[in-house]
Image 1 (cartoon, rainbow over the protein chains, first blue to last red):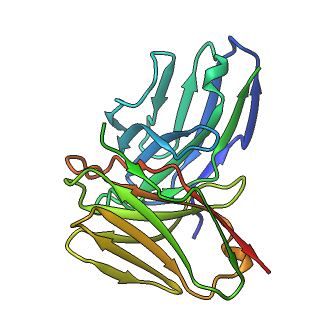
Image 2: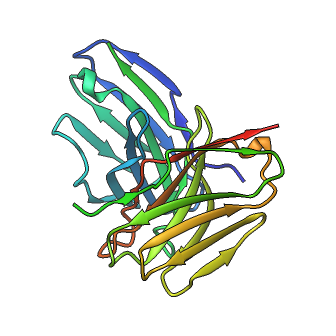
Length: 114
Length: 113
């Protein structure tokens, strides 16, 4: 079946612009996660949703980062007033409710802030 | 803070050889570990996982070994192929939380034909 999909795959933004990154999880997966991956590093946890509820947002680096999943399927990660340090790959992952820790990742969105 | 780390940042092997990628973890409360493969420009791809009540698990051409005594995890790839070339990450669930994965920095595996 289809895996996790993300769009856009690449995004170039000018410093100060707002961006929105989309994630479509695997069908039937109630849990959704966002991770940030800096160049040459492993992914770092940002936030976790179970259905439409955001249960953990402890990894969001600042209040400029906001995530939502209003209908419990598609999720959007929004970054306001982007800064150069926001440049990274943003990965979305999903899992079933029975095995939260077995997470399947999408291809990521590579964000470059100039 | 506690974290997952890797002994070797790069590994180069000949096609057909076996590869061993190592990972050290420091959080003794972690009870679940995953290996991911990440090719350039792609997201991490699930390879194999293991729970702390096991010390070995085998998949297709891959074996994960867990040594809780020394907090060490390894991924063995048999008959390595050029398509195995990628960055390999180990990740743990950091105990306490059964969903928040903590990743190591990764090992770049290069397979020479």
